[in-house]
Image (cartoon, rainbow, N blue to C red; front, side, top):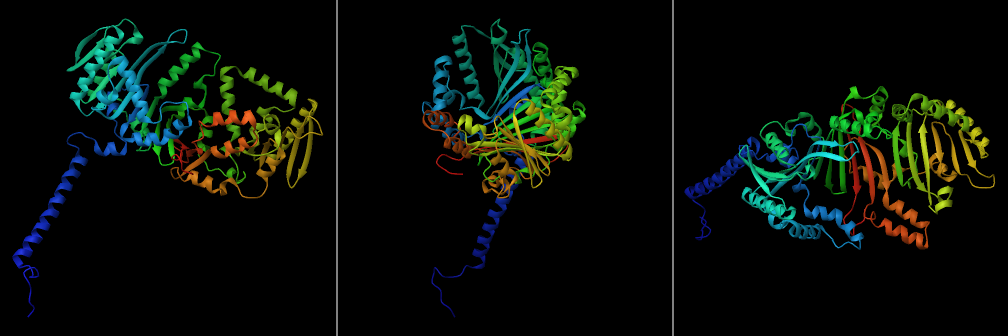
Length: 586
């Protein structure tokens, strides 16, 4: 029989049962606690909107925006933390050697000093103690006078409060500061059990009123603006707009800022501007007229700053040409496989024929068909080519523009810029394009230019010179599928030749990995490569001047834009500005 000491003696059944019972009670208690927490989160009995807050689908200040709000901007302070903002702006502030501010804290201190001097308040002591997750700004009415000056602006600012007592103290202090600074008194009004402080003034643009309604601090352009915000909070608001919700749902949940534009209000404003300034281009004649509403956002992401734009398309407001162009906007592109690996700038798209048709519609709408036809005829009389009938209708394929390093061409000759460019435009009717190029070449020769035509390997090239002994001013021609225009022959050779392409570049691939899956590349800029290539051709004061200007964009490594590949009535574009942390390499 084994012997046990006092410490080694096995637990009896009663003690083992107590231990197991205790463990079971702890587990059961944890389960109950988790169930309780889950119930509070899901059922939201206290109207906290926790899930929606975490996913970016809830904006408290949106409830104070009337349904007719034209423009709206909100800031999610949880997603705009000082450390993240400093990560983005720090490198730029460091580059601005003359700037006194080096981070967000320094900027806040400067602002506090100004607010304290003018109004007797500070963000640190009077706003930070109560402000909540969201701050929103909305405009419900905007009107211009006959001279194009701002005549009426009905605006409202709403800030979420997490400490109503501190918020009320701030409003009282703010009222006293504005009264002392302006020399004008405040009156008190009560509306829907809300005390509103109203600045007594006869100047429309000086109207000011504010108060706290529930958990929102509301500041507006006069009493009516604040009353409308309170009505929206207690009744219908922009938060109840399903169309707005559908658009915002497409934006990233981690966004720090959200922007909204009411399409109808924007069209009315653009029409008013066109009425007062008829010489300008009317935005209502452009494809933007087909967007009913639009939202955009700023998000601080690991790569840098992400900008998303989402628009709802109203097909009834689009011409047939505009609808066709929109349908191909997100289609995949293959021209990045033609440009060389060292390409610094790349922009691609589809259907120059449709793009030109949309531009033509806008030009005709702002002038007349007769004026447009006459301008095209004048061009043809001088250069032997009518762009509207002889060229653009045949450019129905993919197109792209690229900038590459080059030591030739007029850019290098005139400005010592070791850069070249090339344009590619696909066509399904290359014989017609070739005929147009021949006619154009004859027109240039009639203008006393020298055009040298060569054919090799299925590629027809035209070198345009001012003198046979000099280098080409520009090179254009036609390959098996693409019309091309280049700044010099070496650039064209890089684009049409063999070798590693931009699509093969690891840097290029790394950029697109930061975008949502399924998006189509539209534009790519290698900022560091571009700056470095420009520097190579500069010396002396030119180099010093360039470096002085370039330091403000030096923190950016890349910038890229992509479109969603899907169709439908909602379209999205995403832009990422790549800003690595200071001292790191990307």
